[in-house]
Amino acid sequence: MSRVSDQEKVIDANKQGHPLSTEHIKGNTKKLYLESYGCQMNMNDSEIVAAILSEQGYNTTTNLNEADLVMVNTCSIREKAEQTVRKRLEKYNAVKKINPAMKVGVLGCMAERLKAKFLDEEKIVDLVVGPDAYRDLPNLLSEVEDGRDAVNVLLSRDETYADVSPVRLNSNGVSAFVTITRGCDNMCTFCVVPFTRGRERSRDPQSIISEIQDLVTKGYKEITLLGQNVDSYLWYGGGLKKDFDKASAIAKATAVGFADLLKMVASSFPKTRVRFHTNNPQDMDLEVLHTMVTYPNICRYLHLPVQSGSTTVLKRMNRQHTREEYIELIDNVRKLLPDCAISQDMIVGFCGETEEEHQDTLSLMEYVNYDYGFMFAYSERPGTLAEKKFPDDVPNDVKKRRLTEVINLQRELSLKNTQSYMGKTVEVLIEGNSKKSEAHWMGRNSQNYAVVFPKGNEKVGDFVQVKITDCTSATLLGEALH
Ligand code: SAH
Ligand code: F3S
Image (cartoon, rainbow, N blue to C red):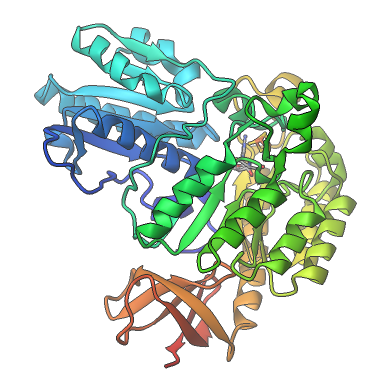
């Protein structure tokens, strides 16, 4: 898998669009076929849905033909993601012709915008459930049983599913995701997330710690804290982030921010690797970097999406930082954490992007020397601020050419970075077999590079010292030291 390919492909390798499965609960007789598209937060939401449905008598199946209920967790981030889901809905409906008792549900980000289309116009689904309404699934399913269409796309001020223990799907038993915030208040002009997932709210730190405790007891070795913008995590007893100003003096004084949460997690589980995703350059403060320095179990890896290297484009995107401020942040990372890997998200061809602004993106990439990245051509999304304010005026062929340029540059930078590991020894957490060979393990180092090496008598979940002897632009190859 190339880390510098389109993000959809990257997630594809993480079982995107594959049926998800888990251990079966005895006594459950109904069969759920579940697919998840989009980001890791969607994947974690699918795990919450599986947990709620397992209480309703459903076990997962990977055989579409035998399903009683088909659920697809959808993504709206780019047009292509929506098209993929539409194709899957056509496929489910073809199966439904043979098995008319089968029910089809749409979950997640496409639910709100397309509910009327799916239910009334096209009649291709029985059930539409938005990201904050999964607790309502039992009621909605009984409506479907009674022959009614069921829909709940209400967004919530406080839903964090804090007390739902996610059922781990297609898990390697080694690393797991734990959601810490939901929604986003940032209003980047290109982005549909604030509309599909609602306002930002943080989850009670105690429930986060107890979920991690449970995972650690089950043998998990690596936890990734998830949020659209983890830096703006803020717990003050519940409520929306935007209402913090109105909180009581006591609530304010005892509030828990992201750096505090990170300290709590890293110190409570010193043998567990801690990762987090995604940071937002505009909100990231130095305390997070200092916390990383203090706790060696926090991985040396930061995903710091910048979207563009041009201050004028960033302004049109409503990102709250300039190129110079981003560079200052990167300089601080390099100073405090010299061995930290940094990755990016980049959008090319945003409204009005000139050749000069595009060159600023390329020069920023060179300056930062990103380890890897996820690069996209701008895709206009209905209802976003950019759709209302700016024409999508960069021609497709120009977008394509610019995308190729950033992908090629990233590939060069990635190769330079992987080559710098040659001869070094890194600690690897084994996740499973290498995709290409059963005789090799695949694991990751702290910097999140995939490391492949011949099997000895290690097992999945072991930490192993591996000496790097070869590399591609995305993978380190080596031998275990014993
Ligand atoms: N919360 C994350 C991003 C969530 S979306 C953050 O702050 O970066 C994941 C990535 O998809 C974004 O970083 C962006 O690079 C890309 N993306 C979002 N909207 C897009 C659009 N309309 N067209 C192309 N790419 C988009
Ligand atoms: Fe989207 Fe910007 Fe939030 S990219 S998810 S609005 S930080």
